[in-house]
Length: 76
Image (cartoon, rainbow, N blue to C red; front, side):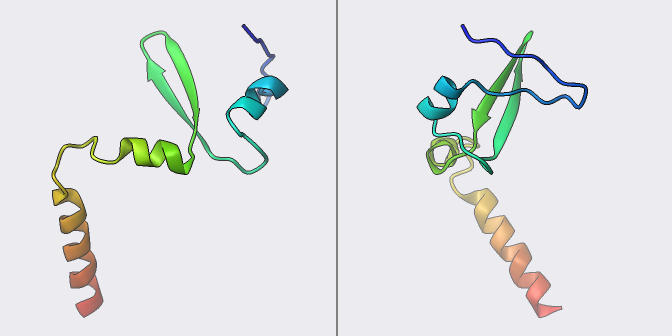
């Protein structure tokens, strides 16, 4: 287990070994997920986004609704 210290600005340094393992570099976006009493930090990478694809279970309906809304906006 690796540990770190939170600064007065709420910043935490991710240990080098973990940054390398998960390919986290300067500018990498991360998301914070609350799971009960835990906070999970996940790098937002193409692989992570691909993993989320279909998680809403809407069979593409959300995308179709978004595209229809964008089309209506263009006509205005």
